[in-house]
Amino acid sequence: MKKTLLGVPIFMTSAMSSQVQTAVNMIGFGGGTSLPVWSAIDLGFFEKEGLKVSLDRTSGSLEQIRDLMVGKYQFATTAFDNIVAHTEGQGSAKYDNFDLVAIGGVHSGLNSVMGSKDVKTFADIKGKAVSVDSPTSGYATVLYQILQNKGIMKERDYKILSVGGTGARVQSLKDGSAGMAIVSSPEDMELKKEGYHLLADAAVEIGAYQGSVYATRRRYAKTNDKEVQAFMRAMVRAHDFVFSEKAEAIAVLKRRIKGISDEAAEDMWTRLTGPGGLNPKAAVNEKGVDMVLQLRCIYGESKVPNAPSSKYMELGWQTAATK
Image 1: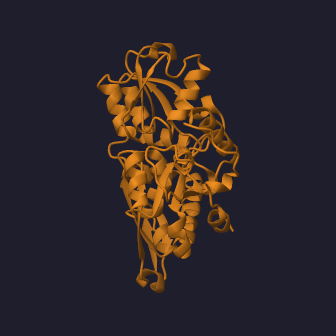
Image 2: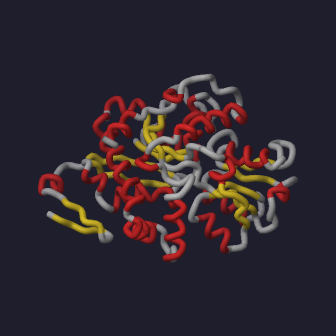
Image 3: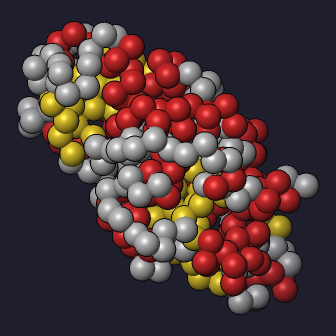
């Protein structure tokens, strides 16, 4: 039986359409970098693998990690730095049994440094506050390093305001409580249209960086290997789809981001598939992993031990999915 969705043919056998789907819950931060997950849901890639995936948006990493650790969600998109920080006891909360690991790569640092209407240059942040999710993990360390590269020093030249996810950081710019924040798309584009200042592309400023990753708990994977394999097969296919099927991928963006214009959707696709964008085949950016660990050594509460990156990743499922 042949079906189409958003112009993309989906071939379903009678066995596939009637098979029992395993329900799994996923939590992420939203924004354009969710395009592969949206595509996997909308185009039936998960369904083909026997999964029924629901996707919720978190308000911040503190809540996200908590919900993962209590078993509310089985999969997540989260900053790779969040996994490293919590593994080393440097995260926003402490967990004796923390076992979240990266199983694939989402993107390589696709974020913008945005300034408020009165912060037109990096120097203008002096004496003001920057807003972050967690002050000790995630993209906060990226912002600290970009500012340091500009000669603006943490704890000397600016204050740090912990507010939560992208929506909260956008609000902090609008209400004047912060003068700068790292913001993902499409919120960065919307802010620019409203007169806020796009000061830098984080991926350009920082170089190789592993941004968000697909993650699950080792405990869950140990007893649900089949589901983890299926999840990564769907995500590899979804990343391939985004890169190879421009028109259809843009259609998913327009379906999922209400009110986005044709021009903005095309611009977003170009950025998502360009430097620092989505990781081809949902692979992890190895050089980017090294950068994350370097920044954690600089800005973490204590030095990250000289441990292999496998301490924070289990990439066998992604490797198998590409075959």
